Image 1: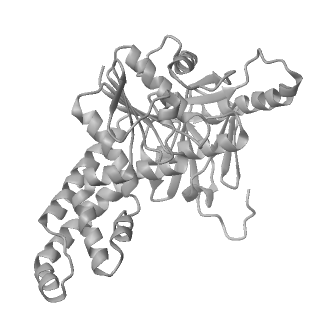
Image 2 (image 1 turned 180 degrees about the horizontal axis):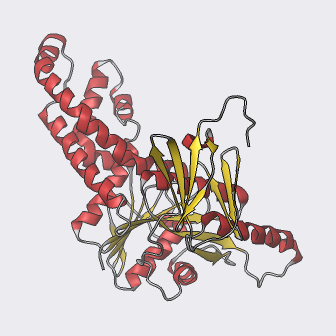
Image 3 (image 1 turned 180 degrees about the vertical axis):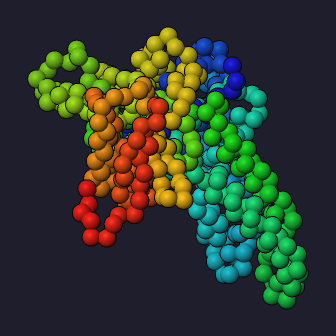
Length: 397
């Protein structure tokens, strides 16, 4: 089987670390050389495995390695030359040396340094699967968008700066004394550009990389997961599984949990409507904390039963945003041909689509939330909904 990258993300506190650790353990016990790493600055992977971890991979079981990335260690390893120049430049401005080193960590560098580990592990050939315990949703989206944004800057702006530097650097250093970037700084930045290009190609390849959304059956958590799915689609990343964690088991009969179970059942129905045709797996609320290999094996059994975690559970897109000369289109893939009247209702950033007995609920990205949906039409197994600027004075849906 081809090497795979599995990224687990979700709102903070939903149990994504547990699911990632359980997946990694199951993969290792199936014989795959597996590494699981945490890119969350508030690490809990070591707590979940009940093992102390560091910034480099640690072998913790047969076929299993684990790692908790550290921003300062990562930057020294991946971006040390660039950071040293930035620190020197800030110190030249009179900033305390210790503070200058802190300020030299530019926005996005932490996310970038974590992503480079994913790329390195995948390309090394030392592992069959890389399992990533991602930061909470907002940070994950920024992390996954970073390769494209950074590559644009490195490929377009960096060459111009390098040409200018050849002329200006000697004057700045000899006359004014400003520390200027040398060829080694530009060389390291260009190497980063190359790595980012390969990383973007890796994460966008559905056969090699999959995002798995972890959530709880709670309204606010579900809405954030919907929004995450939409933005992942916009970035071109494939999601192949939705995991609903901490579901009250039917064996719990205490009257105290009656209302809670009723609320969860209602949300489970909404989940099926919101994320179809993506497959969904349920993990029950266990009687004890899911810490240590024993509980992680139990979690993996609930998640995958006898299936291989490396399997691509869904090869497609649930919906996608397309742009044309006339405006935007929202394309929704339907699991099977539908019959009946098409009803599209938009309220704020939420879109509800009904076709016969089929119902979908989608949280729209910002670019569509301010627009008005037009007449939807069904083309084979895809529903296409046009979005245009609202007519002045028209009532909002």
